[in-house]
Image (tube, rainbow, N blue to C red; front, top):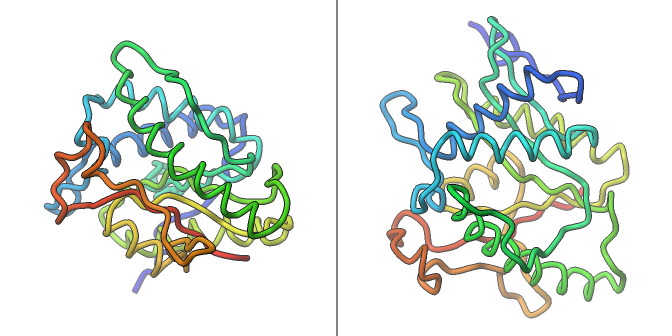
Length: 236
């Protein structure tokens, strides 16, 4: 019986792999905008609620990958035909709170996404720096920003292999923790099971969450689908 390692190979992207960067962006965009896999519709709930199309979101993902790929924390899964069927992309920049709208035109609704991320990121940074007694620096945290898998088979194993590749490298390079944002219960369960990540609890014992019911643009997301975006963490 074939294992995932037989079916797929894994690489960390480099800036010279422009074709793979484009294919990785397409994989991420298709996953977030929505794709049918094994008869099930998979879609990121925030993106699904907003007016974002595949072409624009693909441009956004490609721009992100190109901006961080040299840091060495963008991993891809390739099938036997060298098609990108899985991507886990992150960076080790100091977390950033963006206070102004950066997008316009058909990408205007990306500002809604960024405001959600800035909300939870700002609260996380304040609490984490208070806990540690110092400011966060570049290279201190690995921020997992985007995950997408298009493969029909062994999807969970692909996710695990991608994570192990990045987590092992981060630990070797002295990164102290991995953080991310879980935007729905399905992704939260996946990250808990295969990444070993859990909800970040602040010094008062509360999770850091942006509740969709309090967001005018996102309150239409059914609570049984997702209630908010949570900061998650794993110490290395």
